[in-house]
Image 1 (tube, protein in one colour):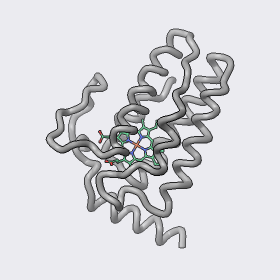
Image 2 (tube, rainbow, N blue to C red; image 1 turned 120 degrees about the vertical axis):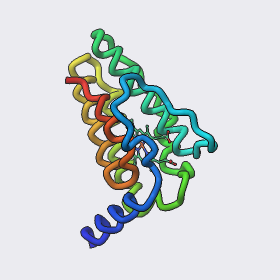
Image 3 (tube, rainbow, N blue to C red; image 1 turned 135 degrees about the horizontal axis):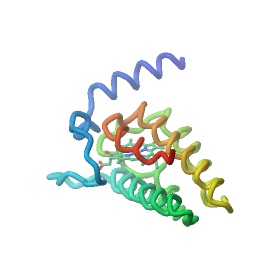
Amino acid sequence: MKSKLIILSLLLSMMYACTPTQDSPDVVAPVWSPEVDQPSELAVIMRAIHQEGIDRKASLEKGMLSTANSSLIFDMITAQPTEPHMVGPAFEPHAQGFIYSYSEIASATSVPAQIEAHNNLVKSCVACHMNFCQGPISRIEKLYIH
Ligand code: HEC
């Protein structure tokens, strides 16, 4: 069952979008390439949480705790993706894991604890993206605080 799902999601991720940036060379800044199409509801949330991750990283690297804006996160489960296959039976558990990691960020009371929670969150971004949307993974990995 599990392996079927994995094969299915591999197939889907090979066949479908989410790849506009896959072959582009590493760009330094969080620059979005101009897009002709309107982004989906889910893509808009993703851009916001990505930007939030960039800001949080910058703040933590300066030794400052950052606040977490959780309202976006809960919309993730119900948001419409660009293509219906971008979400599926395996999507929700990833989203739940993500929400859990996010709550750890919100409740962290020290910079080292928030850095750890932030890195765990980035791990859960990458985990879901492996299944559903591989294009942005290299950009997401830049969010890790080393
Ligand atoms: C539960 C699965 C899941 C999680 C967790 C997740 N993503 Fe996504 N992400 C997606 C899917 C699916 C898309 C494609 C959305 C679409 O095009 O409609 C996407 C798209 C994106 C995009 C491209 C948006 C665009 O411009 O089209 C970025 C950037 C992104 N995610 C960053 C992140 C970051 C950063 C995190 C963690 C903070 C994260 N994602 C967590 C599933 C997820």
